[in-house]
Amino acid sequence: MKGIDKLLEDLNKMSEKQNNAMKGHEPKCKVCNSKYQKEIEHMYELKHPYKDIKTYMEDKNESISEMAISRHFKNHYPKRKAYFDNVKTMEDESIQDAIENYPHLKELFQETRNEPDWDNMVLNDEKTGFKEYIWIDKPVSEIFLHDNGYCLTEHRLCGSVPKKEVQYMEETLSNIDNKIKSMDNYSFNESKKIDLLNQKLTCFECRDSTHNNRMEYMMHLLLKNIFNIEVESEKLNEFLNLTFDDLLFSAEVDYDFNKMDKLLGKFKKGISTENNNQK
Image (cartoon, rainbow, N blue to C red; front, side, top):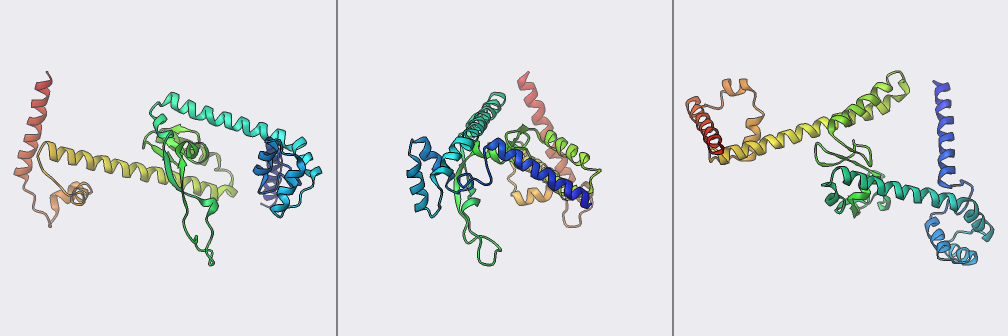
């Protein structure tokens, strides 16, 4: 296991180094590691001289020499700009591809959602939660590109669907199963397996919930339009969750099967009349 852990550590370091090189990030560069990197690069793009950038950073209590700034824009910034320009292009293509294949998503991508602003929330003194919840209106297109894909079965953004992807639930479940199977020979991936199994369980729960909601809606529609009966949702849910044995042998409810027979006859007659009218 120690050998496997060392191998994983080396692979992670190699992957991090490659990602840094691809993104134009140098771990030893003060500009690359500054929390004001975007502001610095924006000043450069507006043609501010290095000395102005140096003064700006001193006002922010960060000391960066003109030489370090020059080195960043010569060696790191071009790769960084090319990388993020390419990312932006790919993001635009992902949105356009999704809309082209599923036109109804165009309207969705123009909406915003009220989402927690995790980056700006501060933990309380006990580290058990946040001092206060901060919310922001986040574009749905941004959520699709960076967080959740879109589930065609449930018609909503979903964390189980990979970002930038549009999938039916069965496809998502199949992909999860394939990932689980590929891990079967590696015990050190147990935690990842558990995460995937939780995703799968969430998909099943979501599907069951939606099916129940659809059944409740159809029953309301049926009872109201065919039998002119209004039923409270709570009572209808209770009925839908009964088994056939519950219906036959319940001591608490006295069912009038003759009345039920008449109602079903009325229902069949209504269907027959509708078919004749269509003909």
